[in-house]
Structures are given as C-alpha cells and as structure tokens.
Image 1: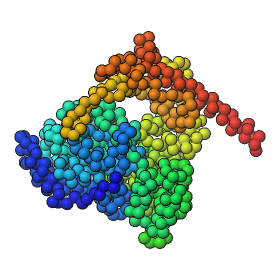
Image 2 (image 1 turned 90 degrees about the vertical axis):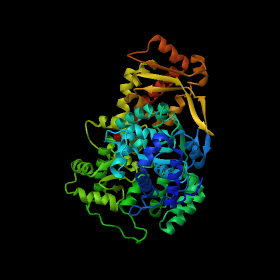
Image 3 (image 1 turned 180 degrees about the vertical axis):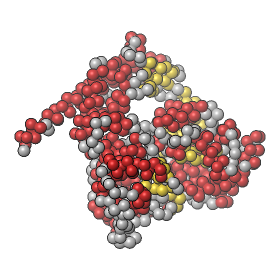
Length: 597
C-alpha cells in the first residue's frame, strides 16, 4: 500500500503528452495539436498545484505530498484493492466512486491519483474541485471550459471537450461531490446521466463522503470504500510529521502499546490522528467522545505552542477571550453551514462575523482582525486568494453544532430541520445530540416523533409519510476487465423517491439510538430471492408512486417484497423511543429535582 509517489518532472509530463498525442486521431488530434502549448501549460500548472499540500501543521508553507502520503487502503465490496489495482481498473475506462469519511484523506488521494496518472504515460488527468461549482450555476464541463479559457487561453465548446474526454485518453477527477450544494448536486447528477453514453468508456473518478453513493445509481459507478489506517500506517504518518520530537516519541510509544487499539475509531483517521498528536502534548490522553475531542483540539489551537519556538504563542489581534472567540466562530459556522457554504468569500465572511457580533453579544470586534486570527493564530481557516475554507469541514460541523445547543430562539425547530437535511453525509446534528442529548430530545426529537406517529397509524402510513414513492430495479452493469467490457446483472435495489423530513428523521434516530434500533429493526428483508420471485431473473425497473395512500396492488407488492415488514419494525421502534424519552423525562422532572435538592 505504501506505493512511492515519484516526482513528476517536466520530462515526464512531456513524455506523457507525446504518448497521448500519438494515440489521438482525426478531428480530436487536430484540435489537440492546435492547443498543444496551452494544454502543456495547464498540465504543468496543475502538477505544481497538486504535488504540494498544506495541512494544519504546515499552514504557512506547502510541503511535497510525497513527504506526507502513506498510502490509501481501498475496498470494493468485500475485496481489498491496492492503489495500483485501482489505477489499473480506472484507466481501463471504468467509472469509480471513492467514498470516505471526514478526514480520511479524500483530497490527499485525489492529488495522489492526479500525480500517479500523470506518471503512467497512459492518460492525462483533468481535475475539478467540485466545491468551486457552488454559486456559479455551471456544470462541471462548463466550469472546466471556463477555467481552461480564463487561465490558459484554451477556447473550446462543450462538445469539443466532451469528444476529448470521450477519446479515452483523458481521466476526469471530480473531487468533493459531498461539498456541493443541493442545487448543484442535482445539476451534476443530471449532467452525469446525460453523459453516460458518450463517456461509456471514459475513466472517471468521483470522491465523496458516505451518503453520496446515490450517484452510483445514476451513472453506473463502482464504489470503492477508503479503509481506516492500520497501525503501521498510523505510525508511518506520525513519523513523517514535523513536530516536537519528544511528544512524537511518547505518542508513538503509546500508539504501539494499547492507545491505537483502545481508540481505533479516532486514530485510524489521518486528520484526527494529526490533531490528536497536537493535543497529546498537553493532555497525554484521548477523549472518548467526539465533541470533547474537538473542544480540546480547539483549546490546543487557541493556546497553540509553536513547536519550533518553545512556549511562544502569537497574540490575538482581535483580543477576544476564548469563550467570546468560540461564540463568534459558532455563529459564523452555523450561518455558513446551513447555507451549504464550504468556501467563503471575504464579503460573506465579514457579513457573517458582523451578524455574529449581535447574536453572541460581543460589542467590540474588528472583522478583519478576527479573520487574521482565524487564519494565522488559531489556524482554523485556510486562505486562498480572496476565499477562505475551514482547515477541515468537520470543524465547521462541530462549531455549528455548538451554536445549535446554545442559541435561544423560538424558531429553533426550523434550524434543527436545516441541520437534519445534511445528516446523511455530515455529523453536526449527531454532535449536538452527543453534547446535550436531553436538550436535543426535548427541543427536536420528541416533537418530531409525536408529529410522525400522529400521521403513522399503520406501517403503510409510515411509508407514505416518509416518501412519495419507491424505485425498484436491477440493472445490467458493465465494466472494463483486461481490456474487455464485461456485462453483469447487478443486485436488486430499492430507492426512496422524494424523501421527506420524516424519512431523514427516521434514519437519524435509528443512528442515534443504534443499540435499541438493532433490537427492533431487522434489515435485509428485501432479498435477492424475494426480488427474483416477484420479478424474475432479468433486468427490471419499476416505480411505485404513493399518493395519499397505497393502492391495494402496491400494498400487496410491498408486502411480498418484505418492505412493509421493515416499516412495521420501524414503527415499533418509534413507539418504544417515545415511551423511553417520556420515562427519562419523568425521572429528571422538576418534582424529582426538588426531592433531590
């Protein structure tokens, strides 16, 4: 897995361009030759950009990616796949979805993949950071055309670019599908669907968080899961980091003993592992809950020791105490989070800070100085020209969650619902639940439960309350294997159509009360056997639409497939949950508190 990432030199790039040029023909080759010098400039520029990286520890200066990269473990289905096997499959003309949790290294992997493909002499990678599409109204093809024209003077139409990619000599890397706004996700999905035929034999890879796999349904992508770090990889990463050697030595010793096995969920994540190294010097322990970890990580960054300057700490320009600084940041994070803004312009950031001053009751604050502190002293924002991004989205989620449990507002239910809409891929609402379970239950879980149960008197009514319909299908998929396109019948699936807030809420509570949910809900009822019994062994596609209620035919079909049985189990779980919350509320009510006092 520790594949050495060689430096991509000018000679390697020239060799790559010459190799691809020789494989092109007809109009595509004429177009390519016409813009050859400009494309060479683009590839060299992209190579310089992606061969280095900035991290929390290296915010002031970019470092070579090869000095930090420890390899990415991948799994396709139940089979582990090496990075090299992944690249080989991709370059045969397959479409791949790389799914990884927050901080697991998706962007690192995208950069590695860009450089690796560039050194193979088989394809030229074209990479798009999808978050740049937000607010533009552009699809990824038009965005790439705009980028090539404005920065590299390459003028082309969308049909010319599509033909170029269609030739099979270019690899399209779409990084950060999960960072798209809901509006842009729909647009990108539609664009991918429209390009399914022309890109049938093109190499495309998309990175996303878990929850973005619905893109596989749209365009026949094969999903690869990024595996957590193994102990050997965690040790290798820590050794590569430039940090206080005494702290590293102690941390590594504890990792090799029992620390890694005890806190594997944390320490197998590259981002969290890095931050834990920073907090370890002060605390010499790892917290058991995620929100405590983020709180301690922020404290470490706020009272940050520069490892190269002893106990030196930069003075904050804004001169805020830590609680006020955190209060402003939580307001800013919530404002940007509920709007789906991962990248903030200077204008947006200043506006959010001014609004946060009123909400957090901080009278004297210079937005410019506060931004400088976020970037230079506390290191939670990264500056890129006139735009700013969080050093990692997980910090935006943590501070947004902090805002959620602190804000006193009568419209708080609406704020909860905005958070709920993102829970499929994000952790903000889960973090809020972890911070203050009783508050989240009182203000959100119980009211939503009561509302859902009021309209869900039967398993069928619960189904109708959660969705407008179900799409049942089994598709024929194709993939390139050893240069040949192989077709195979996929597994039967069902997909929720127009999911409501109730559906998202149901999935959320099943996750939050996972132990009890498992006791009540048995999944896997919709088996391949039941699907074949109902529809046969051939390719099949059907949509069952629900209006106000299920018709007898649809109801009977869902019963035979086992979907109604799953809904019955879910309804039983929801009834258990409302009773459990009521019992716990009685135990901690005012009368009991008076008795205790």
